[in-house]
Length: 227
Image (cartoon, rainbow, N blue to C red; front, side, top):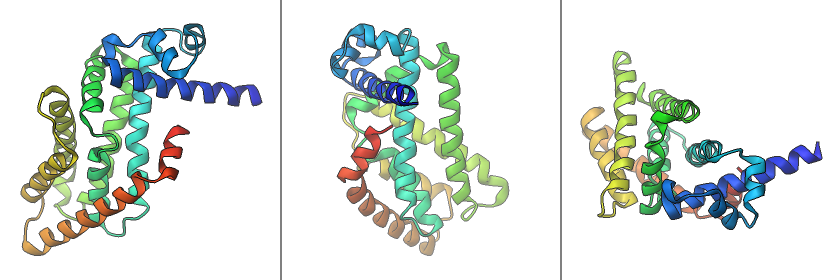
C-alpha cells in the first residue's frame, strides 16, 4: 500500500513537471530528459513511470484538465445563485492563474495532438462534456428548455476558441479581455433585459473578487500540487 502511494505521488510530480516542460518548451521541444531535469530525476525514472512520450502527453492532458476542474469546484463553494455559478465556470476557465500567454501557447501545441491520440481524445471529450454540463445546469434558469443544449454547446465552443486564439496570436490577451468577450456573448445569447444584466454584472463582480482571494491563496496552490 505504501509503495503504491509513493508511486502515485511520483507520477503526480512527473505530470506536473511534464506540464511545466510543455509550457516552457512547447510540445515539440519537450523531451523526457527535460521533464526529468524539471522534476530533479533522471530520464530513467521518467521512463519507469511513463513508458514513452505519448503516455507523458496523456498525463499532461489530465493535469491541464484537472487544473480547470479544481478551479471551478473552488469557486462553486462560494456561489449562491445560478448567476454566480454560471460566472464561476467562466472565471475559472479564464482566471490568470492558468489563462496566460505561456499556458495558452502550450495548450495550442497540446490540442494539435488530439486527432492523433485516442487517449487524449477521450480526456478532451470528458472535459468538454463537463464544461457543457456545468453551463447547462445554470442556463436552464436563463433560456427556454429547448435551447439549453445548443446554448451551452456554443458557449463551450467560444471558451475553446478564445483559448486557441490567445495561444496563436502574438498580441497578449489578458484574463479580463477573455472574460469581457464572454460578457458580450452572454448579453447577446441569454436574456438581456436590464434586471438580468444587472444580476449578471453583480454576480461576475462577486466571483472575480472571490477568485482573487481563493486562487491567490497558499492553500489553493498546495491543493493543486497534490493533483
